[in-house]
Image 1 (cartoon, helix red, strand yellow):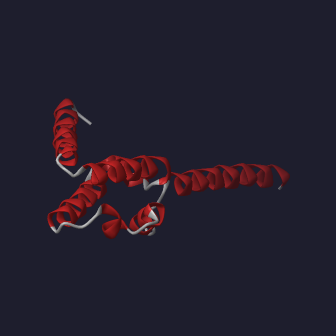
Image 2 (cartoon, one colour; image 1 turned 90 degrees about the vertical axis):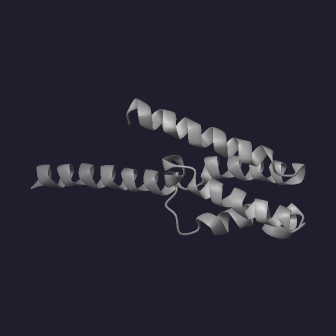
Image 3 (cartoon, helix red, strand yellow; image 1 turned 45 degrees about the vertical axis):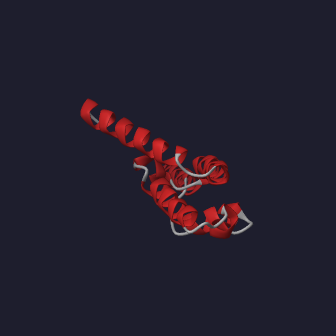
Length: 116
């Protein structure tokens, strides 16, 4: 990643944060909880851009414009809402499990090759 890409990423993030700050207070609170949740358990590609988070802001802006409460948009179980958003995405846990399995398979192959 070159410096221009980093600067562009920062610019996009700042614009994203500015959008979040325009949401009603209840939406902002839920957004920040979703963000924390996704950063802890979410998809590995979340760090590749703000696409998923931007989509959530789009959804929240639409809900707020329609006069809906945030829990009318997400449902009462916000964690389940998040899980549904990322159900088909590869998570950090998935990546870690794959790397452990690959390392174990490589080690077992070495052991097997030595035995032969």
